[in-house]
Image (cartoon, rainbow, N blue to C red; front, side, top):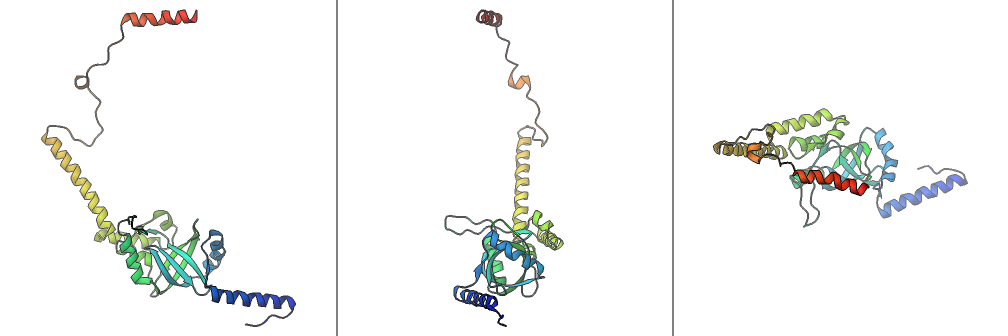
Length: 245
């Protein structure tokens, strides 16, 4: 690096060297806060793809990345998809297929070189975008094809890869893989339960139609309550007239 001349340039040069040595000794900077993450957002957007290394897998769609070029650590979330949450404590419970999605991406990208395309920064300071493997495969599409994720409509519609995401989900739905198989089983179970109740009602001579319920008849629930006695109706006006007088 060329050393700038002049007194002011010499001071800037010393500050730059001190910052570089602090980074080497203390490790990469963190871009966790929303304000600090937004300072890197425009620079990431100007680049076609940013090279990074997956340092930690938080869930099937959330990662800790190290960007060697800028020497920063950041949280990265996949846009357009949603995976099940993974329990962090023994008393917590994981969502369906959350651990399977985390294990899938762990085998795929952990401690591997990847490239990212950044779209935005959320309120927690995490970068949202698309993650690609070293061979150029879209990780979100791979999760959807294997039935380990579902499409998140609001963010998927804003992604440039929306068609690929919806097509991958359609293929997983047709193959009844993992999440799609479970959801199809639940629908079949509810339909079977409704049919069983309908058959039981028909056997008992009851109507189990799915239409709106009919109004209650007087023969089944009795007639309306009779009007109050005449003396009670007549005494009310006299009582009111006395109080008003």
